Length: 170
Image (cartoon, rainbow, N blue to C red; front, side, top):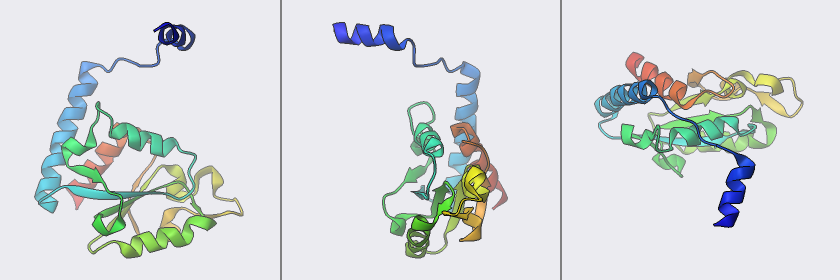
C-alpha cells in the first residue's frame, strides 16, 4: 500500500476526465458505424493490423480505440490475429524494406473481397521517414489503399469517424 501511495505521489494524476459531450459523440458516431457495418457486412468487420515500421504512436491510438472509453468491439469492429479471417488490412508506419514481403504475404493471405486502410501520415506517404534509404515509402506505393486516415497519430475518434465516412461512401 505504501508503494502505491509513493508511486501516486511521484507520478501525479495520469488520467484525464472525458467530458459528457465527447462521450455522447463517441456513442452517436459508434452507433452509426455499428449500423453501417451490420448493413454492409451482415456481421462484424474484422481487421488485421500490421505495423510496417512505425514509431508506435499509431498503435497506441489503435489500442486506445479498443479501451473501455471507445470500445470499438461494441460497434462491430474486431481485430483478428490471422489475415485469413480479416476483411480489411490496417497498416501503420512507413513500409520498411524488411517488412515489405511480410506485408505483401499478409495481403495475399486475406480472402476476397478485401481492402486496405493506412493509418497515420507515415503509412500514407512515408511521413518523416519517406526519404530514408531503408523505407519503400507509403503503403499505397506497394498495395492498393482504399482508405487513408491522416494524422500523426490520428486519435481514436478520428479513426472511428474515418471508418464511418468510408463505409457511408462504399
